[in-house]
Image (tube, rainbow, N blue to C red; front, side, top):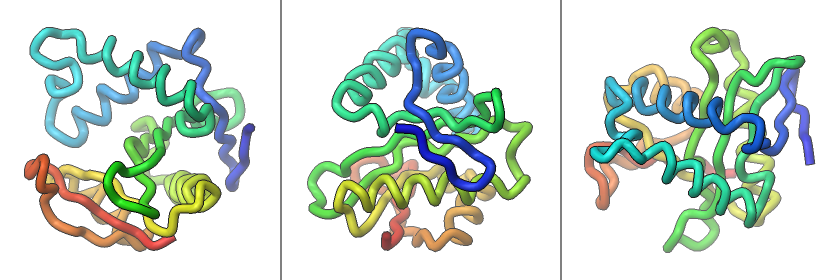
Length: 166
């Protein structure tokens, strides 16, 4: 089930060993996108627990939909992918994540390659993701990789939808 793109290996997340890494990566993604991780933790502080349960369910349906990104023996990133509800033929990237020390090194293109390969393998012809309009670095990267900004999401105007042909 592992796949290699460039110098990176993509392997299903082992939640029994790496749950805390998943929590840390996802919380950091919120901090980068929204300025802090409060939206991740939620008002009751249990957002991380709900997130791990969501990951377990997602992984039970398809282990390749929740992967860690490895460089050598180090986990340097995480991806979560799947189906976009309500749109036929459109896959969804829930999370593109590289740890801060690995950003800006040209590695993210391999995450995009994995996403496209995985989603095409499921029969999707397009992919979408959501991004905070304040995350200029992510938006610039996505546009460089061929993603188009569709504007604010109808159900969550604080984030934009982006789309890419696969």
